[in-house]
Length: 335
Ligand code: MLT
Image 1 (cartoon, protein in one colour):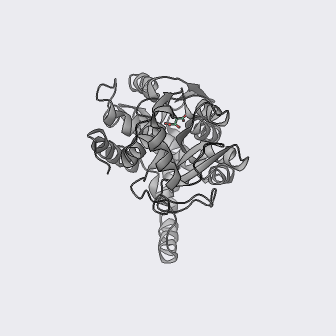
Image 2 (tube, rainbow, N blue to C red):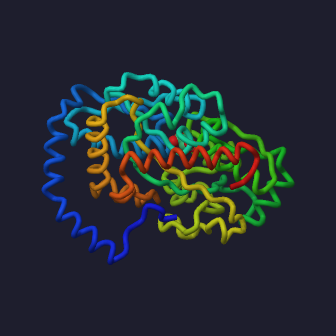
């Protein structure tokens, strides 16, 4: 899973030498960024889901540090609805001056586009990717008293009780929706999907026992798992995660095809000038290097992108790959 993990010892030395060599150029780059007259007022970062969920958590964590670098306040605006696509449509049509941004993810900029062809925006054409913020393993979670003890029992139980089972998600095309859609396909089940405005409120419904299970990003699951308020059957990754080491991988749990690499990234409307994107990118990168941010994200199971994963090009490629991957799920296959 550590797709954005570290470098080998030899690679580390090579990077250190290159970094020394580049040091004067970096200073010049910083001077260039400092001269850009941006931002000139409060920057609005739109979160396309409810407060308290994984997207909101990452956005708020990074925005605090970005505001310090940029020298202007950052306001988080939660715009809810339609699996995050309402907010993405709004930002796609905002003035491209860097003062309105969106924290998008594998859903708004990948699976949503593949699963709903009639979106009001094109994730790969209507935005300037700024930077990847985090990678998020996905877990299959259930209410604490959901009867199956492990994934083998889960498969049998859900198959035989499909009509009476409710699965929470954050709207059509969202990460939670797409992840459990893939699981349904793999298990050959069709439970009732119950939409919420984000997996923040969906998690509360799971804790309260109002829904049976959901597929959610790790940062939203770890606090409730640590307090034993819910349970986890599987992490949809190749490796276990140190934040929840007791949770088996997809292969260990007998569902090797259940592999999701969710991610969260910052996007600006298309046409935002390159120097502004570069200044925002540098502010994200600095935020990701702050120990408060790294410690908090890692503690919750999130993966902090390495320096080589923070360019707009990497984020653009992720968007492209995700649309392709979920396109084949939309056609009924299980990639
Ligand atoms: C999702 O399922 O897409 C997210 O978990 C939504 C959220 O951040 O609440």
